[in-house]
Amino acid sequence: MTAADIDRTILAVWRIEQPRLITSLARMLRDVPLAEDLTQEALLAAFEHWPATGVPEKPGAWLMATAKRRALDHLRRGRMLARRHEMLALDMEQEQQALPDLDSALDDDIGDELLRLIFTACDPRLSREARAALALRMVCGLTTEEIARAFLLPDATIAQRIVRAKRTLSESGLAYETPRGEELSQRLSSVLEVVYLIFNEGYTAARGEHWLRPQLCNEALRMGRVLTSIATYEPEAHGLLALMELNASRTAARTDAAGEPILMLDQNRALWDQLQIRRGMQALGRAHELGGAGGFYALQAAIIACHAQAMTADDTDWPRISGLYAELAALVRSPVIELNRAVAVGMAEGPEAALVIVDRLAHEPALKSYHLLGSVRGDLLQKLGRYGEARAAFEAAAELAGNKREHDLLRRRAAEAANAAVSPS
Amino acid sequence: MRFMFIVNPAHPGPPTPELMEAVHKLADREIKAGRMLDSGGLMPVATGAQVRITDGKLSVVDGPFVEAKEVIGGYAIFELPGKEEAVAAAVEFMQLHKDFMPGWDGTCEVRAFAGP
Image (cartoon, rainbow over all chains, first blue to last red; front, side, top):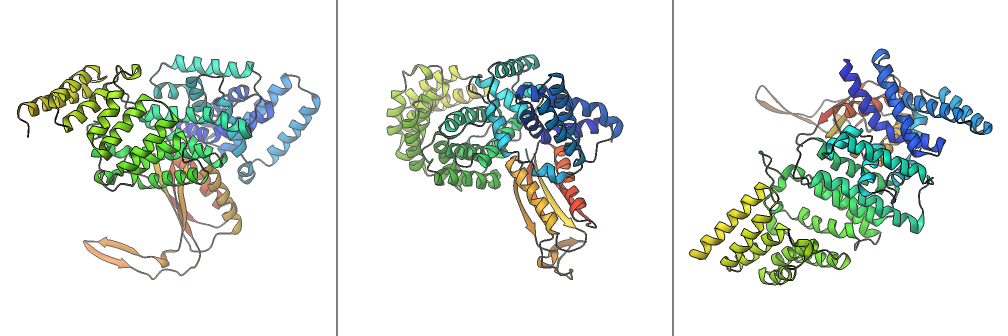
């Protein structure tokens, strides 16, 4: 093994083991930020020793023993109660004796601990961005540099975000506990929001082609799977997982060879990932079984599921999609959802009905500089044969488009409308 | 990145209960950690066949294979950040065979899925 191989191996083992290390140390120390610091020290120790000694036979157990030794040293330095000391020392001894025993390491039930860790990282007192950075660091084992690259931000910004977030957690004397009952549902929404933010950051980004952006999607999916396997009875956790799996199933079909985006209705459906669709449908089914069909994430997942289940674009069940959008719009008042509903209504009932909705949105302040409003409107007018108005709508939308690709596309559509106005077919 | 693991023992023979238990524990952990997407046991080659093309000739090899009635291999699909993680996961899995079924020989083939 070359030095670079060993470094990569260390990071690979690290990613797998890190949540378990933090949760075990947090249990010993009752202090998550401190546990996070000390596990980082174990990582540094691996970088220091493994190149000389080779990768140990049970690398995970090595990291755990090293991290626990640091934690124990810390407790000793902190002059903790002598009794607690002894207990921990005894624990340590037993653990050391049993060490090259993978079975006991596997027995260590991390489900609850991991859930606790996720809730800690996603504490509602932290900003959404801080929660996302902390979760990626503590739950997914990404380094500060990797998180910075994924969010296209300077290292220092992310490092500062993490330091501040950890300080807030330490100062607030946070109870390191998994919320239960009513509180669980409330706190869960803050967790789901973070997971969805991480997913969307990786999924919808128009910029940055670095491999880390798909990795954000994968980490969000992974956290979603963790949440559903340990918070089994929360329908919205299953709803969010369904939404993410179903959206991610289209990844391979979303861009052409040159990296240009392909709209959903034009995608080659043979490239949609059937394993992921199956997983998404299972998660959605579970959300429904739990009575969560009307949830924010479950409704969005149900909409995507309509697309995922249509063999061709023409098979799409637009009446159902437009019904689901109506439910979603009743749940969350958002002009963007309303605009999407208009598109579905246009497909289900025809452009006239859709235009009524779109025209109602014309004065929404939130959509004032949103080019898709004009783009949808232009499309409906074009279908109605009102070419002059369509051209004006496309031209106005083109001025608002954020990037050149979209700008060019809208100019092209304006030109088409202008041609049609001259020689209507 | 997505990986497929295909486990093939060198000699047919059922796994020991200890190995099965350890493998189930590991699988449970990997599912809960969101890394394992799918998995399953495979019956011996005798219950299936091999369809080959050699020197341009297509042939179906339907035995003779050593008979065995138990699950003797398996597959799993993982979503992992990269090859290093996949190898680490496969090493951990194979270590269980070493620990819980002394004398077991075989391979775990680690293959990356094509595509993004």
